[in-house]
Length: 87
Image (cartoon, rainbow, N blue to C red; front, side):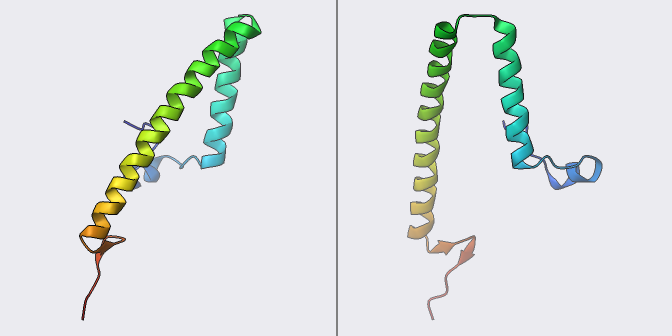
């Protein structure tokens, strides 16, 4: 699903793009797209707000999934993939 993630085998042939560079590339791509659209600022603002709303919903869902996974790992006595010993 996430095309930006690289596996260990990918690193052999391709350098890993760091988080900061990926952010910069994303910003430049968004700016280019906005400039090409040649739409009025008000229209662009409506479009961007729609994207923000969608990302907020996705973020909430991601947090809920992480919380559920964390709570489940706590119930199972697992911490960082290792079983907690109870001697």
